[in-house]
Amino acid sequence: MAITGPASYIPTIVDFLAHWAQCNAAQPPHPPLLVRLPAENVAVARAQLLALREALQVQQITVQSRLTDQGIARGVINLKKTELLEQFNQFTARLDSSYRNTSYYAMRPYAPNISDGQENFSRPLVDAMTLWEKLNTGTAPAGVTLPLLLPDNTTQGAFASGIAALQFAYGDERTKAQDTGLARADRNRIQDETYAIMRAYRETVPDKMREFPTLVETMPRLTPLPGHTPAAVNASAIFEAPNSSKVVYDASSDTMLQGYQLRGNVGEDYSDEDAIVIDTRGPNDPREFLTPFGLNQPGARVAFKVYVILTTGNEAGSAAMLVHRPASSLPLAA
Image (tube, rainbow, N blue to C red; front, side):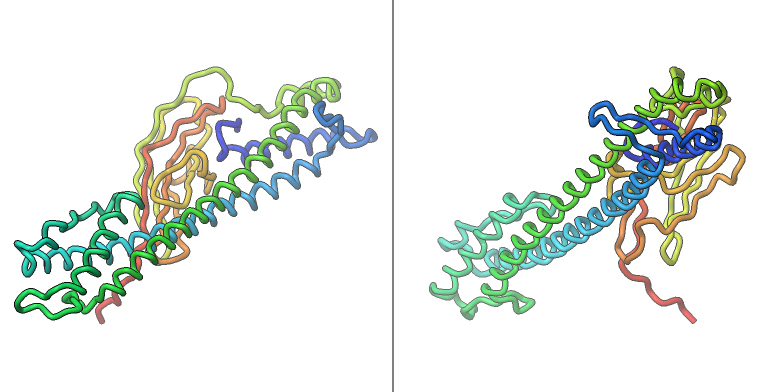
């Protein structure tokens, strides 16, 4: 492997750790290989890189967990928006049926789109809320009883509380988004530390291991070798009950094929910044992945790509695939 983005760090570190172990085994009676970090002017052993790999794995999981929290918060927003929009439409329908040719009707707000952001979605709701309050203190048209109730018995106060709850939900989602950003920053800091060690390792081995030319020649790479980018393969993914994704993909015909990787992240969109390596397959392995990644609760969504990896470290990902675990399942008929 080579570093091509956040997802490639763990496999690349594993390659470096394996090679470092070989160097240590070749050295006796000399002490284990140490590498010097020029910026800090300190020497580090293989154990430090191993500890950082473990810390990075934990932090990658933390990022996925924060993304899950953020997705749940967005789901709460969408549920509240759907409920409020339905109540808004009931209110304006009541204006249409009972308040035509009145000043209230002239101030009838227009419905927002469910996809609108916080400000654009909330503004017409607030207009409806304040108009409803004024309407309740006014003169009732014929056939109307005040205070006005919607067909589902929602009161103006309940509608106002729903709008307030939506704003709190938006605030919670922003907090969760900030938590995700902090988790990414911690992950990136660990990545930077591992990169510095691996770069120093590549600078150290040719000198310290010159008596072992094979080890020098087989040093892991930090960047892909010059060469072509492989063609991406077609892939598809489906939900497989109770909590797994099944991903199948076509074979690559590239003569330099090393294998395939399934990468993914929690959420509705595939993100090169957040995706991690979930599983790998060799060129001749069955072309199928089955994984419970990210689908630990009803309603969860995960995004995947299948990557073709060449022996040079060059790679190409498939089109993104989304898998959604249903929010609930109906019982099977007897």
